[in-house]
Length: 431
Image (cartoon, rainbow, N blue to C red; front, side, top):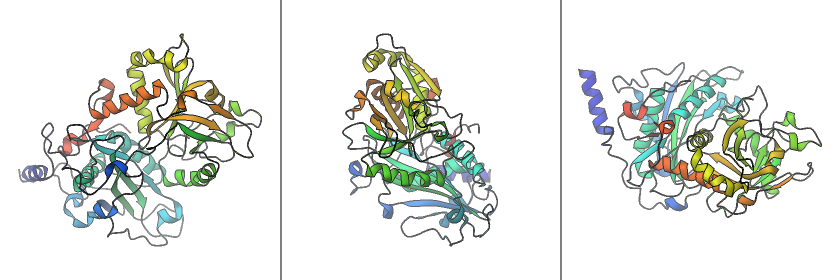
């Protein structure tokens, strides 16, 4: 009874029950949320969650049955971002050997002012797969979800007002924070959750993306960590990204480099961008995206959402496919398979997906200096509106996020961080 009373007391203080959630306060005054860049913004305004362990995460960190643990009771586990930097020594394992995984998810307001978090269970499943790959102890689902709530409630006035692409971005991180010189799993681990209010990743774009088809450098290879959201997967894209930008491109589209043979670039198999998945709408009506089967592509949450929505609402897309493809016989199908570079030239539309980007059109794909010549112009990407299929999929996604579109496949996609911990947590995903 005592434990039950304690749980009820904490729930009453921090949250309200489902259907009667208190919701976030109004957005903080003095912040121009609409014009925030995609970056770390307002660091002096927010706090972050920081937990440590030398073995595994336990009920001492968080016990969902009693709503107790250091996550909720230890002041050192929720600290000001700007005044409490991490204590990292030169021999910190993650600094030397890259043992860091992270996630990216968003909290935003619906038109009625209620806050929602989009598909955090998907992030948890990917987080755990990454932890296993980096020899890091994964948190329990309850700890992961409660930490998100803790960070969002503490920073609730940083949830932006309703607007195009505006969100409070949440980044969970797990890293080896212990000290050592040898190549071993870390003797200590840190679990962190920090936030930043952000705008739209590609806000201000007046045309579809201009992508460089990267034929010289490899982002990931079979047997590696291309499907893991670890820091090294992004570090390896920085030099090629700077090279591409110097040639006037916005990003790189990577190949399964082993599939590229000089003189046969059209047959090379596509991967993804530096931080986004890639889709084509072919003139046959097929909506195709590179398969995850090779283990070289990150399984994006927005990628999965677009595939799910396209399959669930095929008739609506069929109404638009003729206008997109200019083919009266086009029939919409959805597939995950090997997609080749040459198919870009046969596409009516191309777009990319990601938590930050959502669904963004592609207008141009080409190789650069000292590479085999390749040029593909996508007519539906000459302006920021893109093609009708891309526009409809973005509309569907935003309608689901707004709570105005639903189906059996989208059940449990939206979570209220101001609901009770049990309601926010929902059913634990299969790993």
